[in-house]
Image (cartoon, rainbow, N blue to C red; front, side):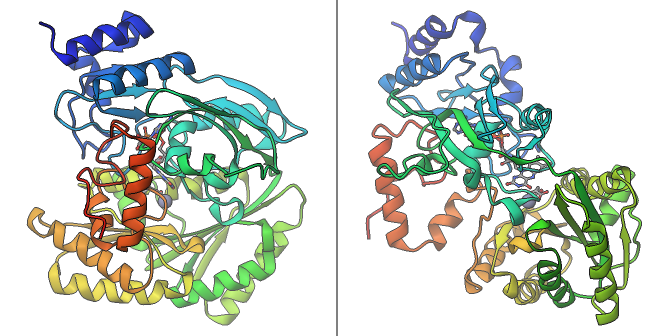
Length: 469
Ligand code: FAD
Ligand code: MLT
Ligand code: ZN
C-alpha cells in the first residue's frame, strides 16, 4: 500500500506535471533552509505551480490528506517563516513560476502582478512609466511581491509611504481549503463589507497563499537629497529628526540609524568604507520629490544640526553615485553581520521618544547577563524600529539575551516584531508576552480559516491549541 506521502506526490504531479514537483534531496536543498542557514527543514517536496488554479488544486490536495503547506517566495525572510519542519511531510509551494506583471496603469497609478514577481523587476517596470513602487529594502533583488505582502514588509521608505499594507489595493488568495478569494480591485476607495484582504497581509502564509495583487504606485521621485550625519548621541538624533520633519515634511522618506560598530563591520567584511569615521552613531537621511529644492532644505537642516550641536560631522551626496554609495553602506549591514558570524536578531519598535530609554535599559540588561556581547544596532529610527542585533553571545546565553531584550521592549510598550514577522523564530516569545485575549482571538481566527491546520503550521500562532484562558 502507498503511504500518504507517495499518494500526495502522485496527485501533485498530476496537477503541475512532473517537472513542477521537486522531490530529490539535492534539488530541494535551497528551499529547505533560509539564506542565513539558521533554520533547517526537510520538505516532502517543492511544488512550483504556474497558475492560481494549480495553486488551488495543490492546496486542496494537501488539505484533503491533512499535510502541512509552507508557502515560499524569494526565501529572504528573517524569521524562518518559509522553512518547513523536519518531518519530511510538509509541502513547500513555491511561487517562483508565477511572476507575470499583468498590467501597469500609470493614470490610476496601480500595478497588478503575480505573487512570484521580484520586487526589483516590478520597480524597474513601473519606473519606465515614471511611477514608483515605494518599497525599498536590501533584499529587493530576490524578495517577491507575495512574500512582501505576507510579511507586511517595511524597509527604508516606510516613513513616507507606510508599510506594504498601505500599498495593497487588491489581492487574490488561495484559502487553506483550496477556494480562491478573488479581490483584485484597482480601487482606492472600497468600503463594501469587511476589508478581508487585510487578514492575509502580514499573516506570513498562515491563513492562505497570495497568488496576485494590485499595488498602489506613486509618482517617480526625480530629485533626491541624501546625507550621512554623525550625531553625538541618540537624543541629538531625535532632535534632528523633529527638525527634519519640520524642514522637509512629506519629502522626508528615510531617517536611518547606523552605529559606528556597524560601519566597521561593513568595512571589514564588505570592503566598503564610510565617508565618516570614528562616530558612535550616524544617520542616513533621504528626502525625495518630483520637484526640486530639496538640496537647499537639506543644507539648512545640516547647518541647524551643527549650530545646535546635534551633529559632529556630515556629508551631503553631490551626485546620484555618491548617494548610492551611502546607501550601499546601509544595505551591506545585514550581509556584513552574517559574515562576521551572525547575531541574535531583534526587530523591535517603540514610540520614537522611548528609543533612548530602551537602548539604556537593554544595555544595562546585557551588561548583566552577557557583558562580552557586541552590538550591531541599526534600523529605521524615524519609524521607531531598530534591529538590536547582539553578537558574540554563547549558545547557552542566547535564550536569556533574546528574552531579556523582549522583556525590556515590553516594559517600554513596544513590539517584538516591527517588520520581519514572527515566523517560527519569535512564535514562542509572542505566546509568552502577548495578552491572553489577543492570543485567543488569533487562535480562533486561525482555526476558523484553516480548519485542518495545514497552512504554514507552527508559524505566527503556536502549533498547540492553547487553553482559551
Ligand atoms: P519568503 O522569505 O519566501 O517568505 C516570508 C514569509 O512569507 C513566510 O512566512 C512565507 O511562508 C510567506 N510567504 C511567502 N510568499 C507567500 C505567498 N505568496 N503567499 C503567502 N505567504 C507567503 N524585511 C523588512 O521588513 N524590512 C527590511 O528592511 C528588510 N531588509 C532585508 C534585508 C536583507 C538583506 C534580507 C535578506 C532580508 C530583509 N528583510 C527585510 C526581510 C525579507 O526580505 C522580507 O521579509 C520579505 O518581505 C520576504 O519576501 P520573500 O519573497 O523572500 O518571502
Ligand atoms: C534592514 O533594515 O536592513 C533589515 O530589516 C535587515 C536586517 O534586520 O538585518
Ligand atoms: Zn529593517
